[in-house]
Length: 238
Image 1 (cartoon, rainbow, N blue to C red):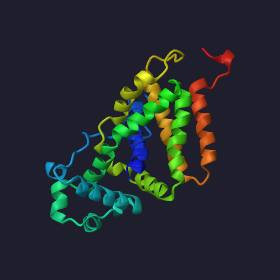
Image 2: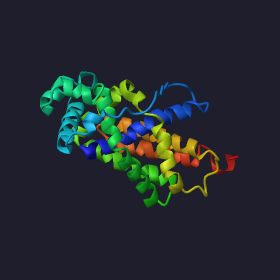
Image 3: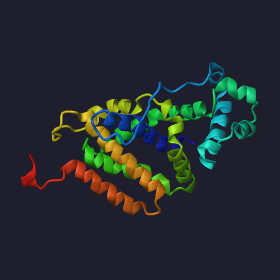
Image 4: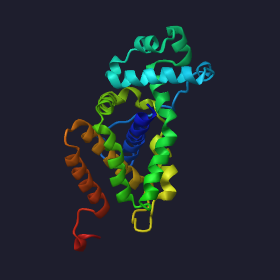
């Protein structure tokens, strides 16, 4: 479960803050992202449970999330398979959105560390880092269950996007010192980071929907190169 969620969480980090950051900086408002508050933690009652009971509920919930569409996720099935009462569930979590948000939050640090590890392995080169991030995250799409899970998430992301409070900004701050800035002209490094992140999100989304990941990868790399080198020939650059 942790491996799958860890691989997915970057997508959520990208979506809210990347789009909202780009749109707030004079980009075309083709997407509207409304961010409200942060992740709601489970009750102290849940946190006081034996770790085996906690893990059992989270594993059952993860299986439900990847098996059916988000709108069809059933709290009844979760509590039956986890062998807990309905009353107990609602003393732990407000609803299924609350539960899903918590599952993602648990793995945020792992994704942060993975992203920073990629930047460090590429010596901070932003182009090569985003090339590698695409390969790291799309590799898991070849797994049928994982691909199905991602499709469910992308279709119904609006339902729970409000659970996240500027996670993309937090990710940028976490990896900022690992980004090589010597050859970057623009002064707004975070804006550049979000542009690359937005492109990565689009690439992953297309990979999830496609049966030809290698073709999507090639398209993604061309877009990254445009971001890196621009659209003009050398003698046309200002």
